[in-house]
Image (cartoon, rainbow, N blue to C red):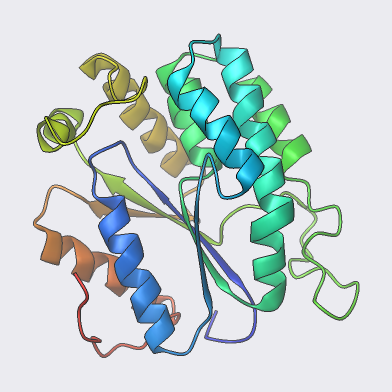
Length: 237
């Protein structure tokens, strides 16, 4: 896809400490420099309701099904209120985590039933006309599969041991960040499984490199897809 008025939905994935946030900001600046409207958001969260549900998910003890239901409830509100309207406008939507995180954290990490998560994905992310163009009824993505998913998922792949070193002492951990290292090994394997199952949608980034090298790799992904110009813009890191 070359630059056009069509919206782009990009998600960013990786375990805590992999460095997603810095490069999301850099990409937002790069797209803005090329005249694209950018919507920045995150999951769980992105709307007033979803942010309330995020606080519950991150701080309160609950069983994996309750946790998954809250996350998907937040996701539906986020899709209806933020993501779909932005895509209809033709924005570039940059989202810090989306459904792949649910399969990695609740599925692989918590050991929750992947088939149940897949069913929730189908229910919650059903297009149901959300991605019709701004003036009419034609869907932006006319494929048979009407589940809304990112056009591209950028996965920052980092060993859990290195992520833990980066996070040590930087902030008070939430209930996920305070999990033992084996939990994050399972999460990392969950992300690897998602890449294997959806290779056409994923771009894997070696997040062990220094920040500048990671940024160059991230930007090159978007240049090769024709979504950013090839010449390097001024850096904002």
